[in-house]
Image 1 (tube, rainbow, N blue to C red):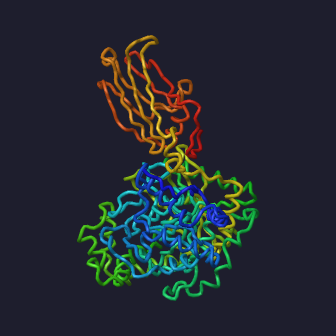
Image 2: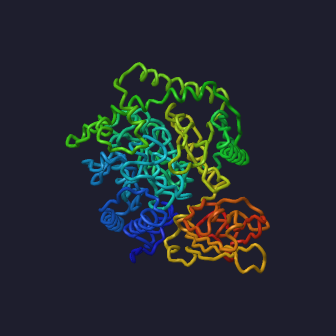
Image 3: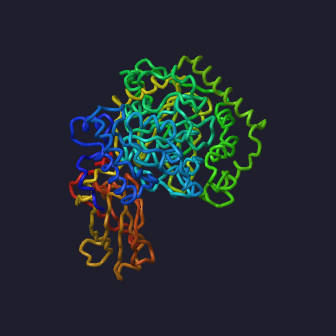
Length: 619
């Protein structure tokens, strides 16, 4: 890959404030920032780990950035995002780029104008770098679509990033843009934030415009940002919220929007905060306990920062959450209404998408079920709307009774699943079902180095308070760790990226024959390519050659077979989990030979004194 010679400034992990400071002192231009992010997308989204988070780049982005550079010199900054490259989820209209919704059916659906919130972002000086992938039609949470396939999690490319705003979350976590814009209907911002160790805020209903957004459920849809820092989250909110004459839900929003969310962040806001710990939303199943424990540890840390914890149960909470979901009742009709704005389109409805087979097979069942809803104003729909009011009343009454300011629970009860597996999203309907705002922030790491997020649900229009709580948490209790798979571009040419070695395993010390393992480890893609070959003398006695976490004296567990009984030779590629990669790099992996005479030898794989240069939590 050829890195642009124009790019000298390293955009990796840079905040909006840092980018502004660099532009102000002449260290970098907006045009160079755009090129820097394009280079990272080329290196890591389309090559390397191939994260597949960006659908399309804006071909005018470099020219727009150059014009903003001139404007900065001649007139000063246009707004709080002047010259800042951002990425937009591909269900939000950007003039000149198609709004596909992740579907082959709409790959050539070009809007005439920007969505209202995109207009506002441009007015604040933002540069739209491009569009990001999403779970097709925003109708799921694993981020798969007929247009782009699977998007990968940069913290473990074998796993899902969450969805439906997974492409935006991956792009922000991987520093493909300063911040990103997604949408949330039933977890679509909050689940990816949990999976990618990001901050996000689902706003109170009506604070951000929905016009120019391909709908899933007009009642529950709302746009919002994903960011690596709370300050970046706040400054992006400042640029995008507001009343839109074309969206009736936003009328009156001005009364609930502060002069600046960023300027209004308070220090030490967790001190005195009363947190209702919502016990029902902590999972107790085998694959949920670790996440629940991590969230409770985070809450204990908040208590140490001055918060008070109150254990809370809300009777019938989960049935009420399920009953309040109106997506199935609204989707078919809302999509058809959006498509009426494109009279030339051959696909005019959800039924047309299904009939043409222009959707991913993983969505076949859910799309057909939603297409079978024939009445836009049925008794069942009216009952679901009534259940939202009931849920909101029950939650607000409980918060008042216990005198708590927020409710806390895991954003996701489980860690991100492997690609192709289901990702349950049990907790995600509480915010949309009540219309109350909630913030998700990083809370911890699983034993295998996967991010976990905590969600705080507040009172209506408590966005400023939620940002302050998250800012206190970030300042006192959280240290961001970037993904190992997307380091600085300078690492691509580093000799540390690829590690090669050979290991000889023998039954007895001094034996001339045994098993030879040759390997090449790509620390960027976390792939181990290997060839294991047993000598003819040993082949009949061979049981297995295995890889273990831990050196010989640590006796760690096995995580991979490199050779098995009956095989004399095997070669292959082994994708490593983040903790396996970190331990291999740190010399904490051993290869073991087991024969009919027992486990004969365990040889540590030592790579010298090098430490992990990619930001892993392990040396």
